[in-house]
Amino acid sequence: MNIPKQRIKISLAMVMPALVSLSILMTMSIMFYIQYKNEKRSLYNNTMSLNLSSAQKMAVTIEALFSGMRQSLRASANNPAIEASAASDQKELQVIFDLMLQSSPYFNSVFWADQAGTIRVVSPVGNNLNQDRLKTEGTTEALQERKSYISAPYRTPAGRWIVLASEPIFDSSGKYHGMIGGTIYLEENNILHRIFGSGAGNGKESYSYIVDSGGRLLYHLDKSRVGENVSSNVVVKRLMGGESGMQRVMNTHGDDYLAGYASVTMNGWGIVMQTSVSSILADVDRNLEEQLRSMLFPIVLMLVIAAYTAARIAAPFTRLYKLTKSVAAGQTVSSEEFRPHWNREADQLNHIMRAAAESLAKQTLSLQQEAVTDPLTGLSNRRELERCLDSWEALRDPYAVLMLDIDHFKSVNDTYGHQTGDQVLKLVAAVMSDDVPKGAVCSRFGGEEFVILLRKHSMDEAYRLAERIRNAILISKTPYLLPLTVSIGVSLYPEHGRSREDVFQAADMALYRAKNEGRNRTIAGVKSA
Image (tube, rainbow, N blue to C red; front, side, top):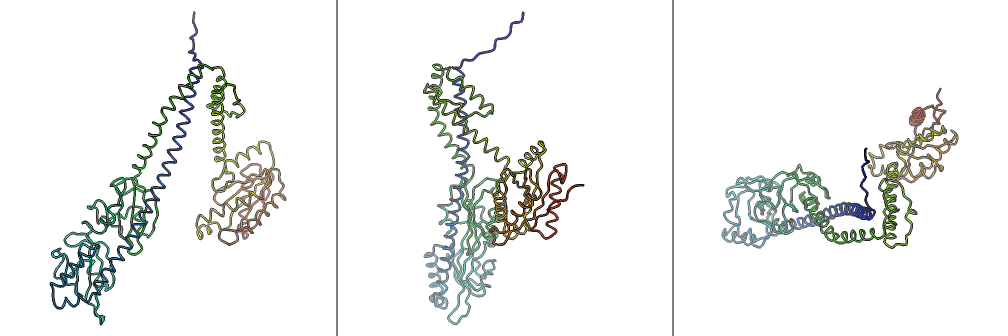
């Protein structure tokens, strides 16, 4: 004799704590997930904004720095003591330049070269400058320019990366006597390291760097990288184009960073301040972990109370269990189903579950709305349009199709930009929505093309509505202050075809005729044979 197996029965006193635990865990998971995403997005935006602000301040500092350099060199170039000492006392000239270097915070070395490029005096003495004649790229160009000059970074014959700033020397009669130059040794301790070193970040997690107009590194925490060409970096490319801004970027080593960048107008240099994404995520994870730890005891306490309460008042929770099961199964549960109860704990849980059910219903409704709505215009999308057609055709209801296309829309995008184009699409959608009768379906069909479905409308009614919409659009105020026109094709079901495709083709052909006949007009479709 076969004895049926006994199914395991679980008491409600055990089920209720389990359900409460599940509800708490689900609610906590959703809450922490949303909080994690929001906090991460907020930290990303704040970090990039702070980095942009830092980069802009550094750019202003560099502008001031080079203005100071020029003023310092210009003052020295106009110093009559230099010309007087040059003719009489080389030692006194050396003292003047040594004092110039000591009093100037800008340069690693200063020198005077005559018009032929011969070094007359240099400080500090013995810095390996060519004592016969200057032949490096920067100095040669500076001598030829005979005006205020700041060089791009170049490598000297000794292998040192240098930036040169110079001012020409003219006597009272206007005769050119060479230049006074100051050099910055990019790979050594220099003015850039002294100014930006303290605010350059903390290494791999956050750091700044400076590039020239050609994308070559002028300043970096890793001095061995000075002179490296990083023009392939997306941010550096933007800086080379004179842009400033912020964005997420992969650096040349493949690391993920949040960058703020600013260009320096005076010399085309660019400043980048960036923070690693991994460090931001680490902060978010730490915050989340701390919150979880702080909530662990309340969660445990809630579970204990729920178990005790369930053991005492199991019966009132039977109904809540069934409702919760319905919600978990995706069924719609009315908030009225969660009726108040004499038991305080059951009543509180009623309120919580009612709020959860209402929130879930709102989210479901929102998702359903998003699934059938065009995100830009707020009109129905093609999925909703097809659903309406299925419903009407199943009932064999006649309908009219108004196919509307914006005239010269491509030129609007090309001339005024896609943001203006989006505003035009929204304008057309708003006019359509305001003018159509109740029960009509307005849909964005694709690009700048729209479709209006009218249930049980004659051709005269549909045509008049099309003309009203066309004229309303024509007199509407556009974002580019020029009139906007549309062309419309109208067809009917079943007069213009026994299938959906035939009716839409008839409307499309009518629209095509409207375009060919000069645009800004409504054309009715031709009935099928």
